Length: 95
Image (cartoon, rainbow, N blue to C red; front, side, top):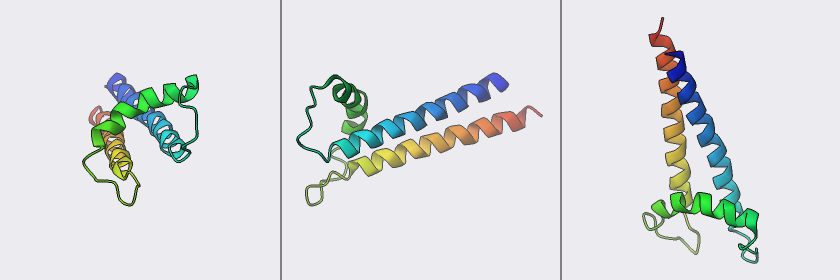
């Protein structure tokens, strides 16, 4: 049971790191003059854009702002909370 709990915690931490990367991507999108061919920016974009694209179109832009990122963040937070709760449940079930 501890191995499963550990795995769930690792997944939750991975989602935390991905959330930070997503935040960086959203903040960088506010700077239109960035060179997205830069290897670092291109890597961030290639890692985060497929996830963000899944939410684009669900919420129409409001005044030029893409609000779909908010929905993407909420979905990540929900999954992360579920993983952390499952991890605690697995630990509690072993006793």
